[in-house]
Length: 207
Length: 383
Image (cartoon, helix red, strand yellow):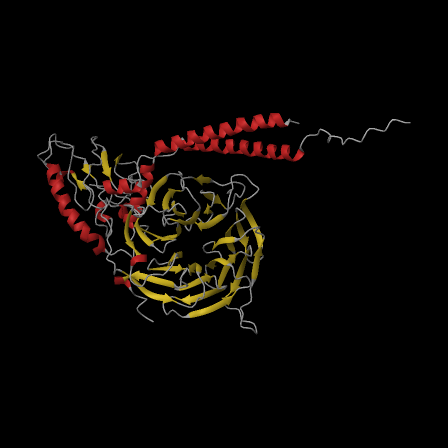
């Protein structure tokens, strides 16, 4: 009698690579390598980026420049009147401060040096000025230009000390102050040549 | 051909590199965040804005939808508004008179977004049909009184969440979608000009909820997504996002450019609004409300709009609140949801008129409301 044949045993599936899993893994690795490239690009790009304070300044100045139908002058002025009274007191104190480099600026913006309290020591240089470039009459020293060839220019990018032939106003469309630049008195309707609204449209020299 | 084991090793190494680079980037960004808008403005002595509850007048309530209002848009020039509702209709309103000039029954009632063309002659809408339909408002209605659709923009593989015409271009429209992409369309041909994201790298990794085109530079737009990021796109370069903005901790439901064109605001499921700088990527300000007494989860921000100067940020929330934020001081100056004659439900959409004189809100209470500043009621006093 022939021996009974052994019962068939199922064969194990042939060992083979899992193409779907391998393909997905390859795609994932490729995506990660692309992400690495983007991140490296962002890291080198950020080296040249300025701090957030400059952006905040731009936001603050933009909002301050533009009228808004939802905000009347009264709804801000009410608060402003009170805060202006308070600021006047602060200014008065500041001008008498032992810190001789603090100066007082008018609400109209950049003030010529003679508005600085003469009680301060040392007296500021002849061609220095205090600029309030926020347009809100803030009391802050911006620049003292000590060189006799410097003029103090306000508005646009803030207060800068510039030689007469160099660009006066910061960015935003201001041109250089050399040659035929109009003087502040001819800024035409601007309350002050050191206000952003004026310097944005034409060149001003702050006298 | 690399083995699976090699690939796994490469995957682990690449993941470690990505995490390390992200941390370096985060630290570098943190060093550059030397202040925020509120701290800066306070130091500058910026006076706060104050409103009396009666200063913002609800001068028009637009009633006519029979379902939740999901979206609205103003015309760029006239005082017309288009709204989209769960009732499956678009309604075009004269905001001055409250009259309905058009009521458009949609093929697909599940509409999520609508937009006016720059010339005010057409409207676009999209939703769960994954398409964007264009209607010419000068078309004659058919025998059943239905306005014919003039073009259907098909191609998205998911719902259309948001749409906006490119300013001053009647023929270009951008949509955002649940398929994780944004698309720039040629409305006259119905063709997709560019696809932003999707198969290409640096696209969103979840549904895109909102788009906003920069009116100062119409080549640029931002998109907000359920992947908690906002991405900046240049329509001339669809292959990758220009920049990705991190910060939110939940879906970004609404994005809107700041009036200066260099910043944009966001509103998120995490309950906050944020202001980002487009060029540097800095997060300039977070507008975060106080948790309620019961310490419940913060209500989500559903929609935002800036006033024309950028001084005010209007934010609609899922609990019916509509906060008016002072963007410079990061303080809430008014809650429109607490006023008399406010909406009875979630505010789903907001829009500012092009001259900045009126704010329209749309709500799940089926109504739209137009608000102006009391002392500047003209032209809404005429009817």
